Image (cartoon, rainbow, N blue to C red; front, top):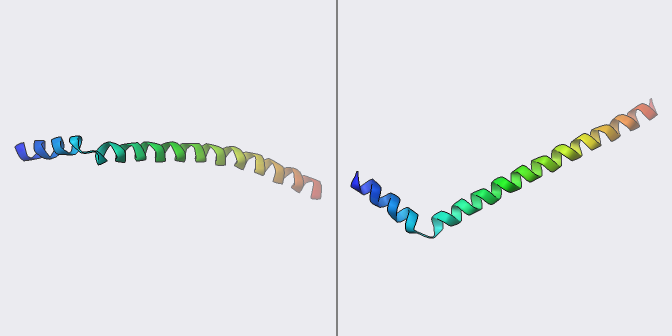
Length: 57
């Protein structure tokens, strides 16, 4: 039990722990933004293809 507390304490004192958390937050933010942009552009591209398809038919 004390060993586990010591490991957790040393992890919290090290500098790479917060850095890894910051990278994880940035990666999550980038994924959310890219997903939103792709979803928005996907709808616009779909509408454009529908318009062209109806004009060709």
